[in-house]
Image (cartoon, rainbow, N blue to C red; front, top):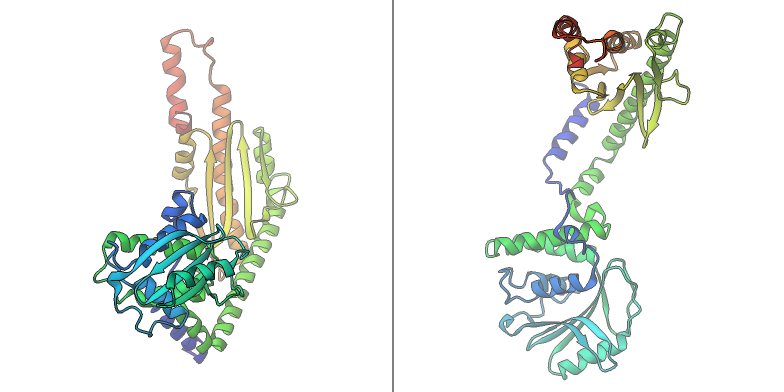
Length: 395
């Protein structure tokens, strides 16, 4: 094994050892169709900010907020039993502050900005918080927002990205005591934040960035090889398509055979003879074969493992698919090492089987007697057995 391959293998081993978080599936707020509702988010935050609620996570969220603003070590969390959390606090001017956390030692006010911009009267909000403190408690004033903002009147900005990162960092210290149900709800809420606030993946997976930084040269070389192999697969498809165009559309080729059966064979490229096209950026080869009310699509695309995969699907009676499978039409896999000629031969052979099956079905169907021609039971019994034996697709 040369040094380059050994470096790639080491990188793969290190990458596989990472615990990568992925954002998949709908969250509860998405299911309920409230993924961006500010009041809903504020209510959820209020529940978890209160260390005395039944979630069992104690001061996880409150401590995380204070940590983000650099106030977690001030001793203000020494008397959690006095903490109260309120939402929609009316100010002297009739405005409403989203969240207020009150304790004997501190007052925390949070203006929550899920999607809206910061247009609020922060001077009014700040005065309300100062009045509540009465000079006897420390006041923390926070704007919690999607994007960084520059607040005024002694408010500090906390982004959701930073807060989620700190919550996840601290979470392990609290899971042993948490109510499992409310822990799942919190994790689902964090997932909603991450999905709808487009948080950079590095906030969830900082180990990936470190791995990439420490192996930048190897990663760049690996990406170069990956890109080269992908490009070669596309070029292979182009070459195979050119071979098939020369073979399929001659006077005795498969297109002519299907046309004689009143059917059609065409590619999905810009020219009907070519099968090559791209869909949503994916390079593909695709043929359409149709006779009567039966259509078969045969497609070749790039799959994982730097291979090409050919498969098909059918529109028509269910027995058609069974007929094709029993005749030998199946998924095919091709590697870069195989010759273009060989791949073209395999694809042509598969198309030939499909055409033979469709042609046979059409010919037999065209020769079947109509109801008016079937005069008695003996005619029915003499007409159907051969048909069913030769063409199970008609059953």
